[in-house]
Image (tube, rainbow, N blue to C red; front, side, top):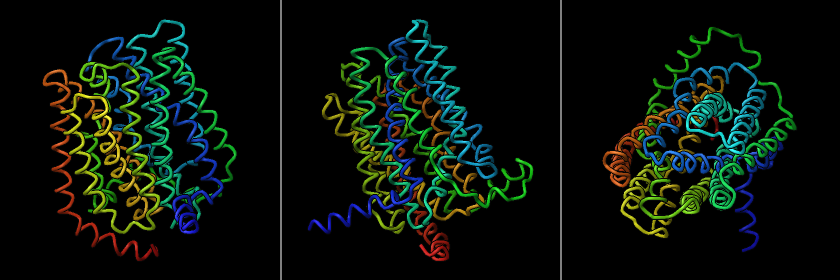
Amino acid sequence: MIQKNEEGLKVIVRALQHRNFRLFFAGQMISLIGTWMQQVAISWLVYRLTNSALLLGVVSFAGQIPTFLLAPVAGVLADRLNRHKMIVVTQTLSMLQAAILTFLIFDGIINIWHIIILTSFIGLVNAFDMPTRQSFLVEMVERREDLGNAIALNSSIVNSARFIGPSIAGVLIAVAGEGVCFLFNALSYLAVIVALLAMRIAPTAADKVKRRHVFVELKEGFIYAFGFPPIRILLFLLGLISLMGAPYAVLLPIFAKDILKGGPHTLGFLMASAGIGALTASVYLASRRSVRGLGRVIVIATAILGGALIAFAFSRTVWLSMFFIIFAGFGMMINLASCNTILQTIVDDNKRGRVMSFYTMSFMGTAPFGSLLAGYAAKNIGASNTLIIGGAVCVMGSFLFARKLPLIRRLASPILVEKGI
């Protein structure tokens, strides 16, 4: 029995055998706790300063719209430039943004326009960081068969931090204010920067490829991604979830303060609950040995996400809301990580950065429109009704994706066979 448990654990963490991924894993774990602490603090600060659902949506829009506009260009650069060096630069700029927020709030001069500008800046940085970081995973894991496990483990640290960070932030905001969260986030970036600098990265084929005009390569990536049905369908599903499902996170301060009659600790508990669900999803995906069956898992997860959002919208007690939001976090993470795994598995290496930029654009790039729409809808029809509509659309999306699943399997299977997966 013990031996079987040990073997199961080795399967779950097998990507940690790779030195560079171990360094990345450790640095990201610390840094992402700070990131989630700052996210909770920003949401609470905006609502405390303005008491406006619409401005919650505006701030979220400002932080995410650069990804929609710039991610495709960032994907071209990720295929052309040294991804390792690009991530060092983006993480350093992210640290600078958190440091400026810390200064402004401790100096007592923070205002909503400061937050919008700095949130737009971090959105600009993330537009280049996210597709580069996603495509960099393959360089940290030498064995292709461990790539899916690395993606799942990467998701697990995001969601471990999503559980730990908001819980700490809720307490710190209540005791010492939002500034402490910004300070911790600024300092936490040192961990990932040190880890990146300690890596030993071998030159890749991309370093030797002859360069063409950026827009030529961008067009090539677009035709490749949207001309191949499995990639196109996955990207459209992610866009739908981002537009109608993901904005629940933007509305959580309203549920915490006005519907559940709580404070910053309530918001922290809700976000931590979503993190528990997402972490559970990540561990489940890490325990899987192959990509077989992931399409069916995506169908079920999308339906779970939609149903959980509808149930959460009707809840008026904290513990029940926490219960439902666990399932929302689970469904969301299954979708993100499973789509990521399938895309990374079937994509050509020389187009990986561009395809992952479209992945980033489909989820993070569509999110600002979802956030703005959710903020506007919450102001006019209420936060609960907004989530009910979003959840119903996600359930419909799961049925539509299920109808396309046979086509995805038929076209993707030969690629998997060719790659020996």
